[in-house]
Image (cartoon, rainbow, N blue to C red; front, side, top):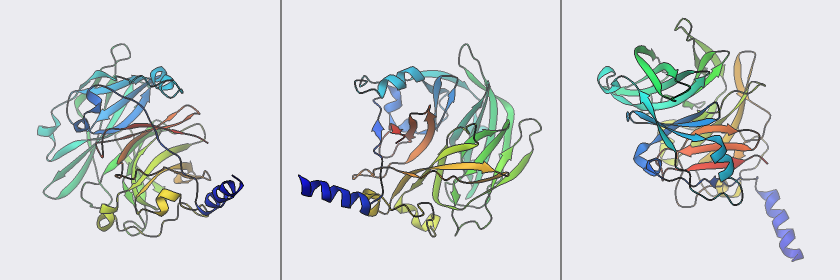
Length: 319
C-alpha cells in the first residue's frame, strides 16, 4: 500500500491535473446529433441551447433541473423543452448560409452569430431580437442583420463566441494563433448605433469555440479545443497557455487539446487571467468537439458538444 501511494504521488508530480467531465443525462430530440448544438447562454434561471440549423426552435432547461442532475443521486434524464425561435428564412437571405454559431442574452435582448460560406469566401453576420419573458419565444426581425468582416480567411472558421460587455456585444473569432494573426483584434458590436469597433486580444493557439458570460471582475471562461486533423488549417505555433503547468496524463499521450481557459478584460484588452487552465480528461475513443460553455454559479462550468462524437452536455466542477 505504501509503495502504491508513493507511485501515485510521483505520477501527480510528473503530470498536471486533469478534470473529468461529468456527463449529464439527457433525453428527447436534443440527443439527436443532427441538432448540432452550437452555443448556449443563461436567460434568467433558464439555460438556452442553440441548434446550428434553421429549425425554428431553441432548447431550454431550467437551472434547478441541472442542479438536481449533478447531485450524487441525480441520474434522472433531463428532457429539454423546445421554445419558439422565429426568424426570417436565412437560407434565402444569406448566400451560403451555414448555420447559427453563438448566442448571448442581455436582459430581454438576444444576439446570435451566423456563419456562411459563398464562393469559397467565409462570411459572418450578427442578428438580434427579443425574448418574450412570458412565452420564452425568441423573435428576430428581417432587418436586424449586419455583416461582420472576418480578420482572415479559413474554411469553416468564424465568430463562435458572443459576450455582453458594457451593453455592447463582444464577438470572438475562432482562430487566433501566432502563425495566423500577429495583431489579434476582436469585434465589438454596438446595438445602439450598429457600429463596429475592435478590442485587442492575446494570441491563443487552436480554436476558441465559445465563452461564458463576463462576471463582475470582467473575467470569463472559454473553450480551447484542438482536433489534430486541423493541424494544416490552424498551423499551431508555440502553445504558451500552460506556462509552468505540466500537461495532464491524457494530454501527454495525445495531440488533441480539450481545455478551458479564463480570460479577463483589462484596459480594453482581453488577456488570459492568472487562473490555471482546466485540462479535461480526454476521451480515449474520440475527440469531443466542445462548442458551448456557461458558468453554473460557483459550482463549475457546463459545456456541450455539437455532434462529435455525439451530443454531450457535461459538468466540469471547480476544484
